[in-house]
Amino acid sequence: MKKLIVASHNPKKLKELKEILAPLGYELIGAGEANLPDVEETEDTFIGNATLKVKSAFTHTNTPSIADDSGFCVDALKGAPGVYSARYEGGYQRVLDEIKHLNQQEDRTAHFYCVISYIDAEGHQHNFEGKTEGYIPFNAKGDKGFAYDPIFMPKDHKSTFAEMTAEEKHKLSHRGKALQKFIQHLKKEV
Image (tube, rainbow, N blue to C red; front, side, top):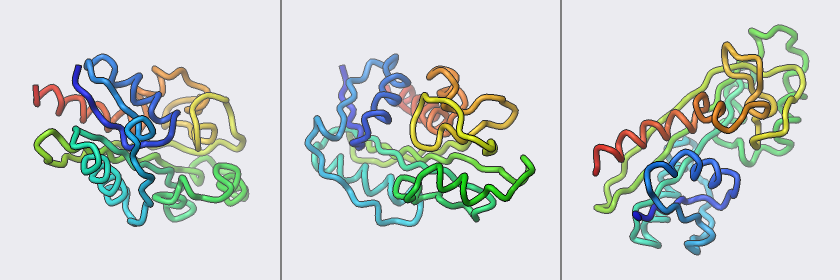
């Protein structure tokens, strides 16, 4: 079984990646298990932060590695929290508070964006992007998923990510879309 380092200390993200990548026959090893240091996200782009993390993982393990950086981008907040989503004090409740004056669905648009960076056994980096458009409901809904999932409804759907099954979310999510591109790349590598 091939090993793949996942440069994340987030157990929910690792679980989601394992669910999606399990059919490929890879053993996914999280950052904690691989004894990877935390990497400070100092870049102002998703690709920049994903690159910092994947290069650190590959350097420390000399094993094919993936990292992602993703974020929740609210149009009415000029793209915030964006690349700072994980460090946005107040999380989704702050977003709801900041847009509570917007009464029309068309004014509450947002998207999730994800970059998966992968360094293969030869040390070559590849990047895969995914984006899911949608809007923010007036109240948080659901208890599945994590982070901003309770306040995001994908376009043309009536459920938030936090109300969906894992399978439903994977088909629609920004990370799921980026991972599908990554999977297609892995299939070509073999």
